[in-house]
Amino acid sequence: MKIGIIGTGVVAQTLGAKLIELGHDVVVGTRDPSKLDDKKMMAGTLREWLAAVSKGGKKGKVATFQEAAAHGELLINATHGQASVEALKLAEADKVGGKVLIDVANLLDFSKGMPPGALASQTNCLAENIQTAFPNLKVVKSLNTVGAPVMVAPQALAGGEHTVFVSGNDAPAKAAVAELLKSFGWKDVLDLGDISSARGPEMYMAMWIRLWGATGTGMINVKVVR
Amino acid sequence: MKIGIIGTGVVAQTLGAKLIELGHDVVVGTRDPSKLDDKKMMAGTLREWLAAVSKGGKKGKVATFQEAAAHGELLINATHGQASVEALKLAEADKVGGKVLIDVANLLDFSKGMPPGALASQTNCLAENIQTAFPNLKVVKSLNTVGAPVMVAPQALAGGEHTVFVSGNDAPAKAAVAELLKSFGWKDVLDLGDISSARGPEMYMAMWIRLWGATGTGMINVKVVR
Image (cartoon, rainbow over all chains, first blue to last red; front, side):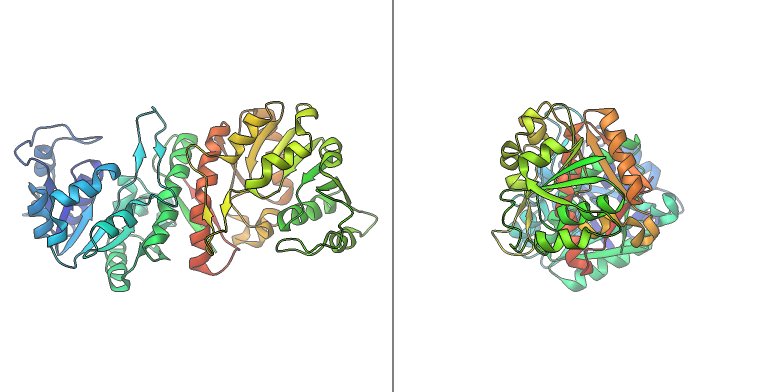
């Protein structure tokens, strides 16, 4: 599948590498594709990423936000939550038709030091904000509740016996995302409801941050027992 | 142990009954102890509760907020989150010394219909608000992440293989609460850190509400895998 990733940090690079490994045709969109040697947040440069994903005849591509959004049949928002709506505007995501967008980002405040504050609330939910700004897109919130390494290798933690969530207004879009998640190894994909239900996993980020602090590792998640 | 419970709803009644069953000396504090026949939120009247907990020579007591706070060596806040600080003021919790207070309440907004909105945020955390208003108390946030039936019978859900959290500034207070939780059957008690870490479980309530909606049952919790 043709996939366009908006963003270039550790989440974008990790998801992109996994998707390429699985045989997808991935374009990572960045503000300025000529800057391949900038160090990215918690990750290497895009030139290093391009080298790392080139194996067995497979390769990735770095292009503009716009090119990535135009390329993908499926889009992924992996920008900083507070920059997401602006990045998607630069990507002209309003002109790409009714594509599915997986929103994996979080609204985090690093301005007051560590741990960062989770800013999502009943009245400020990133996935809802994106859906409102881009009514053409089929926004599905997912994967924001785990760190990048867990996103693409759930079986590396507790044998994969833990839960990932999907929220969105479009049932076929959620089903498509669930299929993709299963191709990553996810066994328990829980549909929380419409896009307003993304408030749950977004506000949960405040808990994740404290679990991370208490356990000292980002290799954590929750299993919903029911 | 002498335990004073502030509040009379389903959580107060459920915790009170379990504590009496375990042999503790429990006083439930209410605004007006003469009103034993008022129907309580999601629970029966206090007269019915007094009858139900009277068995095998054991019994409970209903008194004023003040009497309950004076009685308990350990206190539990089981009021509505938005009424908690006022209720604790009526209880004169500032005059009871350095007692441990387990805060099990949540800030929930029922004014916009169902599902209720979880109002906790980085700048509005009930446990922190209580600790600030009553610096004498040793506030420990716990149990707010599960419904009343799960609080006192964790083994009834997934064999008890799930997690409960404690947050607070005082290590011995957290240890005492963890002991009490273990007497309820909790196996996995995770210490999240100081009282500011209660933002995690309080904001998680937004997730719990969506899990409840998605699964159709309040017999749910999460197991932290790590």
